[in-house]
Image (cartoon, rainbow, N blue to C red):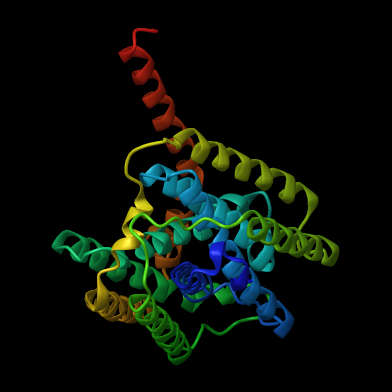
Length: 333
């Protein structure tokens, strides 16, 4: 998979691997969607699909010159749908259509937004505002992770015991070490100012082929139903339309910082984020279940559901308002 990237640029390859590791960390560790009977073949498929999806996301962001939070939310929505259909359908499509909003457009899309935001935060110079914002996200995200990863496996009929704390902490440390190692290699690579992270035509064709084959495998195995495929595929098309609508020939983009990787200073941000995530996770793990609003799992679920319901209408509303303002300025309204 990594060999099909545009011009075989080392920086591009490592950027894809870094994003893939962050996405896998978010969806597999922070959300902890593991079914007890998840097979080695499914893990192997996930190891192939995370780089493929990461390469596609960077291609879309670079090709459409993604430039603000709303474009990032649309891109995160595409990630959440692809992950839910191709990598974790057992946990995300268990009770459709409810889980379309709680887990697909909610949990996985939200975690995709956070992980892609962390990817962008690691690339450029480190500012005080970025450090404070990232620290707050890591701490509160850790609290949510601590309680959600502990109790979410018990939602299945085959699991009655919460996730062991040692297993959760070990998974975080192993993943963070891998992310740090790839980031260190990324520091050493040469890159050009304004370098694009797009795929070649052949590379894009291979990525799409891999995703289509994975979808066929999932449908054939009965893990994904046709209704979910059609409905969530429609959401992907809408999100692609958002990215296309936002495209501009000139102006800055969020990925402009990819050529400004700041060297070893990002290690401070990564170490701080890891430490605060672990502290928050310990706090969240110690929270007891309660009733309704006093139940931390209920609070996290409500957060996921609220995001899943609101993000697409919010993006559409903001873009529609911008279009009206633009028309008014040029005298067409």
